[in-house]
Image 1: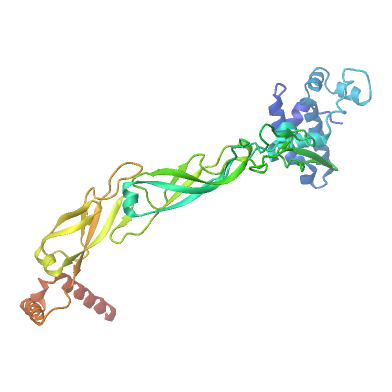
Image 2 (image 1 turned 30 degrees about the horizontal axis):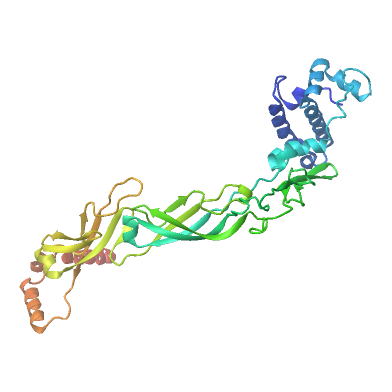
Length: 385
């Protein structure tokens, strides 16, 4: 067959480890496999050379003989001679076995215990927790009732009746998989008798019916840290569903949602609110009371304050759950126009309006108004021009 050196065929050195040889074979077999080369005879021959090199170099005895005698050992064995290769290279492992062994590492197959299905870890669970803004800012201890699967106490999660234990599957001998030959290939699949577990339960537990888990609503006391916000997630390790037959439990994730507040809006660690201020207070200045999460505080409003002005109260926001930094409270002033005026009050306002005059004389009292209308006039002049 091939006269090229087996080490050169696989592209490895003569002192390469078995692991390196297997890795090289995987790489080259994927490239030259007949399913990929679509009937190219030269590449099929190349694939047979690769397979033969792999068979020899992964068998310690054959590799030793090859290193000592080279291809002569192979030729003598093929012809049935009694030379150093009498054990035979050509009579080595069937290609289907090699294919399953090597590609099983990639696709999850492989012989023996390596193919046995592992008991599955329990599923993760999510609990949606709704909090008020005050609860989210200050933190809270909450009691959660979680419907889930827990380990059966009667059988300790094994699924077998107390005093017994699961037995090794007689069909797959504990491997969890069986091998089916389909022409050129050997295909591995989960053992149908034990469903890939490698064991069978002949006398199941009556409490869990052989499942190893039972449904139960468990109660958890959870401390919600101060400063959480909508979208934050708290992980409780191993508080999810119990795993299968003693496998680790999943985790429980508490998903936080903070309800809208009638006064405050939150953005990160800062709080925002709108504070109505009377027309006269905004014009003349004075003190007003503004709400915070810790109670009311006084805020000094300068005279001639305009609507939309922001005042920052430092340290009156939210303490960060991650850094410990405390945000601010930003108050937006909204000037409230008087309503339900009496006749006398309307007359007084009319007198105030007259006292401010008109045109340029009134501009010093209402500079924003004048600036706005000057801008409007300039806009239309530019359109006409």
